[in-house]
Amino acid sequence: PPRSTLFPYTTLFRSQQGASVIDRTHFGGDFAVADRNESKIFPDGSSLVRVEEIPWTPWVMEGTEFKLLYINRAHAMFTALIRMPPNLETPDHHHFGEAHAYVLEGEFSYEYGTMHTKDYIVEAGGITHKPTIGPDGATFFTIFFGGLGGVGADGLPEGGITDCNEMYRLAAANGAADHLPAPPYQEVTAGGN
Image (cartoon, rainbow, N blue to C red):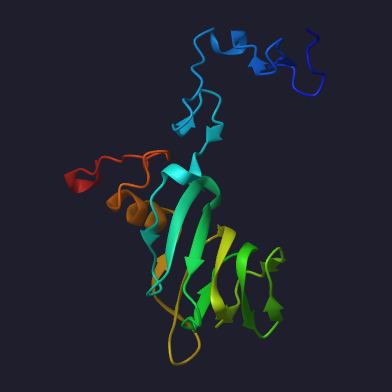
């Protein structure tokens, strides 16, 4: 089969049985594929997440839950499915970086209008807002940069930050982070040595 000119390290073709086949020679020939129900991080850094196998984890807003799909600590970024119950009026919260959301089911409303199923929105970093979830609840695919946090009476951010490390901690405590890289370990010694 011909090599792809766009992806020179991978040969993709259709076998006689119709299944995709991957040339594993770039990875020393021992590139193990994932089983049907297995999420996996591959040697080249690619990830496959079997979303249905991940349990829902309670999130920071009461009654909400999430499935953490991916984290990139170098960019303070995480992707997640977030599910919110019907008629939830979220507390004021602050976005430290951009937040992207694609509405999979349901709707929510705030100062920009109502976002319906199949709508996509990018919320700018540095904003504070308070969405209200619609009568059927809502489920989103989200990408967060920098995380989010609470807002004080003065309208300024206060309290903890829900960033990629906090999301990982919550998911790991629920047994829902085995498909993600653990935080880097840094040994701490007395006297700063």
